[in-house]
Amino acid sequence: MSSSRSETKPIAVIAGARTPLSKAFTDLAAISAVDLGTHVVTDAVARAAAKSESMDIRQIDELVMGNVAGPPDAANLARVIALSAGMPKERIAHTVNRNCASGMESIIAAWDSIAAGRASLVVGGGTESMSQIPMLFRRDAATNWMRLARSKTLWQKLRALAAFRPRHFKPVAGIQLGLTDPVSGLNMGETAEVLAREFGITRGEQDEFALLSHQRAATAREKCFLSGEIAPITTGQGRVVEKDNGPRDGQSLEQLARLKPLFDSAGSVTAGNSCPLTDGAAALVLSDVATAERFDRPLGYITDYCIAGCDPHRMGLGPVYATAKLLNKTGMSLSDFDLIELNEAFAAQVIACEIAAASKTFATEELGRSQPLGQLSRDVMNIHGGSIALGHPVGMTGTRLVLTLLRALRERGKQIGLATLCVGGGQGVAMIVRTQLED
Image: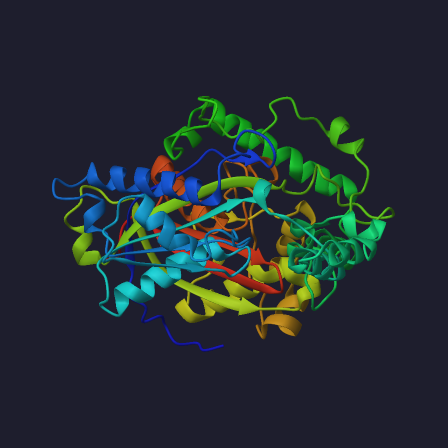
């Protein structure tokens, strides 16, 4: 890790929006990732246009969207969204995938485009319909189906049909494959169990954290904080969805305690202390600092970021590695941040990050530091709840963290925040945001 101060030029966040977050197979299940993305891009640009007399969708130079599942009917989903949202066909768009950090990767890609002088106004965001991740056939079943499709005579068709066995009609859940790391062989919940055992995190501690997430998200929803970033969306049945459906107002420890372990019968990670499968999208209008002067009161600025790798078995510790790298790069400390958004993939994963950040042994052995990273205080972390309550559409969450954090800083009259999340496969990303730039 380099100890030099950052030379990164900041970018401005002009405006942003997200859809409501809905548990998979519920309110937004019939809306595709493309349509979710188109909706938030249109809304985010409209919010930016309200801050400048000369702004509309035709002024956007480029669009970058994060997405993990990759809809088979929209290979470069960002390009489809760009044209659907009304961007001129001459403008460019591409899709990025850094698994759970795809929504941040889109911001980084937009940043690179702005820094290179290729664009001055870029939309960066993320979209995911986890409801619409397809079911798949086994490879041998697919071979049989192809043989049947190519059969020309009745005899050939009968021979092809005779090759089918009952197992060939049992689909494979694409979402299950996507949430399993092929290197470690563990799904994301199993990696949370690894951390729970390594750091001695109890079931009770995890359930208490999950309860706090629901309580904070329910309060934020009741006070209409979350509605300030939500672009209500109309379903095909004409119903308007305008609120997240994950936070539970009456959640209790007793209810959480009744749930059985989900990934290991002898473990402690349950559906209640994990983030749910979720549908949703988010988008930010981004620019260089000079261009931002055209707009009345941008949301804020992103001033630096770092990406780090770690053991896929312990992927949930990614925020600690990425934050350590970022602090080393900038010369900052955790105590410099007024607010922190750390994505809640699992309660065990967040608690493990808290323990690791405060541990001198972990700092020495894992981070190459003589002192602990610092305290991830719950007083300033995820103050409006997190993904355990709200949900985690994997391609968009990174964008949501930045949007929510900037709005939370403004709400409290604070200036500087840290947005960070773990990444399936063993990575972490951390970003610094500010409501105003230093002189």
